[in-house]
Image 1 (cartoon, each protein chain N blue to C red):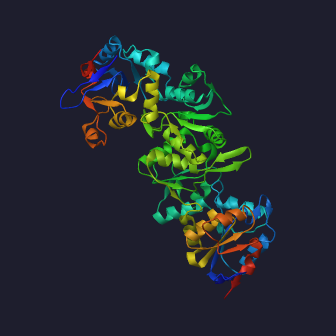
Image 2: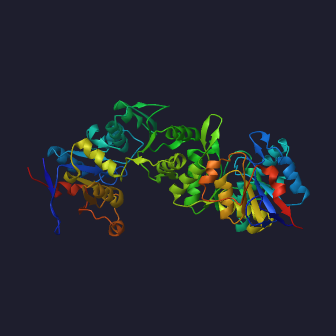
Image 3: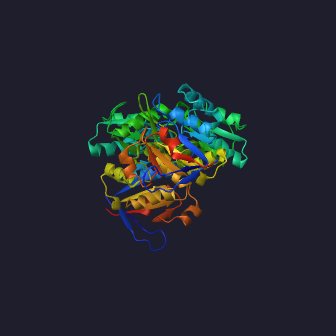
Length: 273
Length: 273
């Protein structure tokens, strides 16, 4: 299959795409409300047999848990079509033939590793994988990770965001703890979450599609659009979620197209079969 | 009073000094054993009324606790003559007229702040002071510090060492947690521990002596000698503790003199009264 991004206005060149990456929060839903027309847009992609992945930067949920949340919001997406930094990590370890990993993360993210046959080792392991871990960050868990890194393990960061907005105020994401371990052990983490090029590369490997044949749809001009363009994908910005005209105007990276919302995606994808 | 560092060999120019900074671990004692002649060297300084400070980079002990340990090892040093990063922090806050501080540290370091009349605030405070805190590092304590920094508090690092050797292996020092908070809040910590110039400046302020009238005696060519030279002090390296000829040969900074041990200090200080 093959689709093309045609200019809705202006002189953009058409971009042929075989697959779509779609950000979740702010694109498919805002808060607990689906974006109007989003459910239909995904149904159209499924009907047209255009493969896609619902991509999110959460490192607190397994793919199964992400799919369940989407189902609750009215999106019937196959679990295997959800792609998270944990899945990117699993794919990255698979590339290296790694069967064991020391994981520091919260929620049920460990399931993604276990289901892929990666043993979660408390002691010796060739990789230390770090996600948003909340209360699992302790002096003891930091020391354990540090000692593994000093012993030669490599540091894999599921993300390196600075913070997120919890119910009672700002709360640290994985980034500060990644920075701490880098400083302590004198190493540089390999980041597999957005906006790292690795995230897009691994999501596309999951789809079996080349970057120049894919488009990313997101509401964050830096993380989604900037990340996708650096990775070589076409990029479509939507005016929902965290979209701000000022951020778009100030961005050094321009999206290939700007849509009102994901509801406009079917009209944009001019299928050429 | 006025002393001069005279060349024991070679053509070093004599350096007049009014005061001495002396590192503890590796200079006055190694492990639990006083360096031979060290007790007598300090007694000579006291007899000659040459003011000095026993300086250490520990952020796990109050000045009182440092003096008590020295007493156990046979060194009768007035408590006020022990100078630690916590004392440097207290002096630094005093310079700014700061009366409250959010402190994250272990041991009895809080005493140094309390005795100086600095209120240790759990909530709002203009400074977050961070030392070696061991198990006091939790996700909650990190978040609390982070929120204060985002709210405009300044970050004061008692030290930013990477790690130390605990009984069961390497353990993280304050540095990695300072790096984490810097990354999270987008700030740069002000470091008051060795080898920062601030440490030497504040120790000299405690003595009321200018840098060019003081000498530092240490066993670490980088931290003690490099730090002191950058701060404008004369610097004497001793061949005890962590002294390694290779480290001296590789060092970009040369000490003004190298002594066998602190026992040779009286002979070096050629008093001119």
